[in-house]
Image (cartoon, rainbow, N blue to C red; front, side, top):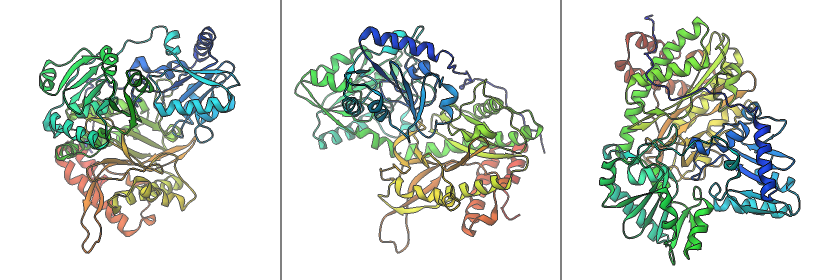
Length: 612
């Protein structure tokens, strides 16, 4: 076989710094000193910025700075004599490794919510502080109920972490640019008219757009204020009549963008937002329940307006991709698939040769993607987990945790990319050397669940919760399961984790044609190995001869082979084997013309029919 080498590196989007928890005790004590100075008895530190975003700018990484925990979701509650970090099932292994557990107790969300912990640990007459820009109205209501149950109270205060954070980074100032209509598929004026119609139907006079993803979609703009998602941080006020007003954090606005938006919007600074909110006397204003800070509600009401807490209608509109966005997604996945196949072919040789580290694999994959063209960023920090690290669902390799991929282990790599025409997300689990019988059994069960989702056909209006069990049934039959959702929504050159659509036990939103989701069941043996298989899928109409109801199904967008060495054909039904062979044939036919000779030779073997 022709030797395959990764291209020369051009730029690194991912770093491998090791967040140290050694200063956790010192920093928490500094926060406690600030509490004593303000006569507060505790403070809530969520993993959040003003917009409840998944990826936040460096100056909003308060939870990571205070505790060392770098996950994308979690809440710390710091009291005078105790402290807790509440995390969900994705982070129950990661969090204890990152925080000083002698100072902070890691509490799995399955055992207690932050509110329940507050109710059990806050003492009578104690006052719990919170930053009103980091909590939604519903979130504050939950905090209040928990504090009252304990006989205490809550109080909005300026952020106390900021007061003790020496050397806190400055807010981002990345450029804000036009997202071409050729990729967006719809003009700004047309989008805003749709949003205004939704506001009118809901009896609202205006909308505060607090979600930067919605801001980007509605005004066809993109930015670089946070890592991995092309966002320009800020807000917009959209009245039912008249021009919109954008309040952007970054002053670096492309003059072409300012000119293009001039007929429909005025661009202002973030500092002008208070004046904008102060103009709502006698006006009913929709504030997004999911991303709108309680501070927005309070400022609107202080001006004499009515804050209507509900859904931002843009969220649902953004989730349903138009023809241009769908075409872009297909093109991006084809280009990305070729890069991933080149990487997998290289990985096969590099892992066999020995000495391959998790970080080296991340860097090589990024180099292959950069060489493939149009790479703007990775869509999230690559999860590169060998052996036991693969069992940590959201493992993020650091220079301290980096380990060599060893024979007899599984290697899990979950990665994605941002291209101007689409966002990708793919996970493949590969065997290094000969897999054990248990590994092959578990892999094949995960694959069966993955295929069940890919082949699913269901009535229009079906929710993600209704099909989530399809992915779990093969594992359930062996008394197994996984502790994360089966699928999340994905944006169009936007967030790789987009709502409201999802395939999960809590997925209550109907899956509509045009939505893109992930299909990623898994299995994790703590301390030994992890398995996850992920493709992105597009919801599409399905015509069934003689059918009585409108039906939908999935088109698989992701193109890359599964590791045949881990598949047990005897565990597969005939129709599952047929599906895998057909998918592999499609991968081969689509990507082979885009590959070098060595990668093409590898792909031919990797996509051979199962029974050969």
